[in-house]
Image 1: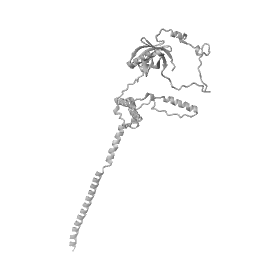
Image 2: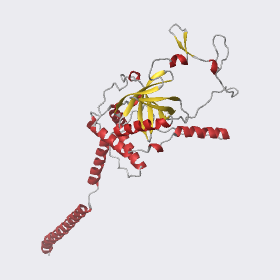
Image 3: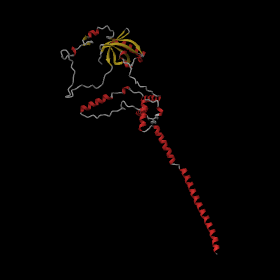
Image 4: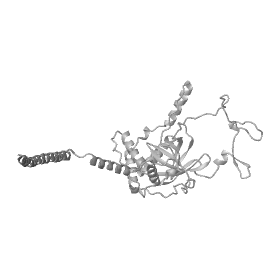
Length: 361
């Protein structure tokens, strides 16, 4: 790999000649600007604004623009003559635990390579000292016309350096956090913890740039003259007010399903009366449910009423048999009483008729 800077690491009185090599590379797909009318390439030419003539790279130097707009030329020799020890040296100023470095300060990453055979011994000494101490080295160095802050740590068997932003280059967080007071309940935190545990860990080497692959496929299709079908956008969409509890529960079930686990059945959502201290998203969701037909509690009450009505209108078989027996007994008793009364009436009629016959004789 090509080095971008040559110098030395200053480790107390020990000097380690090194080469600075970029540790990262961009795989992003780059585009060119074209003229839409004919597809011609758009290029930028470096032109002097005084004589309006195009100039080459060899004719271009550096200058500082003053407040009044005047230019103050600065040459490479001027910068090299600066009395800064970091002009050609990575000067280690302290060794601290890695936890003391704010990730917000992280900038570009580099590998430090030993420059020459004599540098191998002190390079290895510094590497092993960093390993055993489990600390990182904070250093100052100059690159591309300015002094910078860096952090040295061990990656495999190589010393890597992360460029760091100066502390005063980190913006404050004022006005970033939500200004509206929100109460997060323990139940919501428990669901969030369950989702985190279900998602688990990931092999960082397995992650890749899906968007870049899609762009590359698009370019290949265009080059072959094939048409590309528009894909439907996925995701919940931004700016929507959601039921936080339901979203967390659905996320946990989806994560378990993706991992091949059996998701637990969905529970009935709680009523609006039981969530008076719920977040705004929860209350809004419950209000919309009321307008569209009631909550789960009302559905339960309606189901219970239907069951009670069904029990009243459809008695069991045993009481039906008893009722039928009673009605049969009553009808039999009535029939027997009618027969008895008819017999008694016949006897009385016969008795009355007999004296009449005797009298007539």
